[in-house]
Image (cartoon, helix red, strand yellow):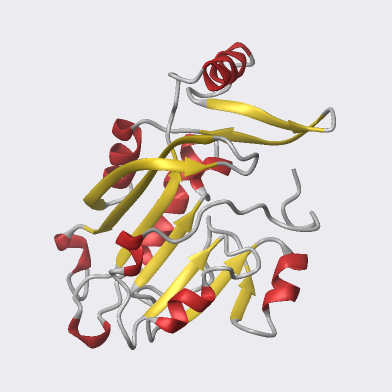
Length: 221
């Protein structure tokens, strides 16, 4: 699927309270996969500076009149090390089914989230995404279909109108924790809760907060 060119980017997740609680006045917040910058008002209301990033140009054109946004790829964020205090990855990992791309995205988010505005210490990466929900027959069947197609565990094609829109991938808690560790970070909190999908189904969701490991966050390292 060409995310750059579709008319809009579907968004079903609102900012979780655990994420909003980490945002303080004067902070710089990067919203990766921002779409039309739907989280911008909440971030701005918290007194923080909001920057959105997405591949999808049509969505960015609708957002640019209200917020600072840029076109870019989460695999190579166009920002300096430590440029932000909070980096939000909301339903981003789910559209990156390959292990290498998921790891690169997490590593980039950690790299640019080392800011220390207002004496708040190391920056935060806030992940909101979907977890495997095999207890629902609909999703168990999707995971089985994905496995039969040779896709990674938890991955499956998302179809609409008889065509594949993209490949989604849901994760387990162990996979997400290992992803953070593999990217050089450590998990601060992990909260599982119901989350709505783009099609209106309610499945297992996660809000994960992480930051760069202490030895990697020291100045000059």
